[in-house]
Figure 1 (cartoon, helix red, strand yellow):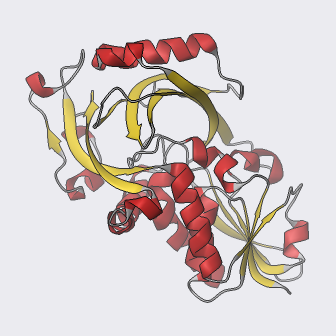
Figure 2: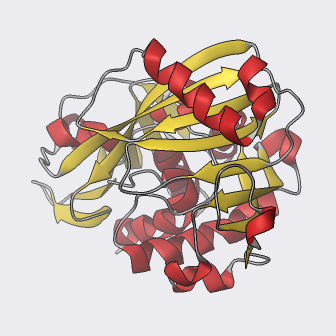
Length: 318
């Protein structure tokens, strides 16, 4: 066989898994339908925070494992796209979070008078903020430096990959609904607006996990990313003008200068949520091979990518 492992899917979960495997000495190929900078991962905000992901206990541990890696990568933000940035999580109480929150350095409850916008409670934090187009290209370069190969390829099943590698890793995200097939996969639509940054240096979020609307902005190089939505069952990939206007209006309630910022563009992506949470599971393939499913990361694929990659790698090598 030409490879030990074929990873199907070239987003952040697929590339991080591929890097982890290749750096362990395995011959790895990534099959990706899209260019890495055109995947759903490229649309992400992308702030480290375990948002809309289950099961909570496992997600917290894997998020912390990833936090340690992002902390190291933030030492070279120009190459990796990872920076430490201060910000506020509004409508969030520290005691309402899981045990993982106690291990996030500097995470603290704010006095009501320090919470921006029309909010009464919030947390202050300094967290990794990732410029995803830059980070995805860095991941690809790191993977290729370890001997990996990325190929553009559309798959309709895992049989073709199984004929070319002893292990196939399924990092297909929302596409797993049809490919596996897994009816538990539920795409959750997210829409963003990109505007010229009017001088905002801190990120802000107010994201109720049960709401279809969020209010967040993330200062990225050359732009301010405004969000957002979390629309279950909506698979439209075309930006909605009314939704975009509502996003800008919500963000302007926190920072009024956003209302007059020039719009640079719009982005839409489908978060790969799954009823029952993340699936990292090995199943046998005909002929003695193995298929490792690794999908269902919801709104936290970036946040848990390194921790989940370690678990997937354990199943590959078992």
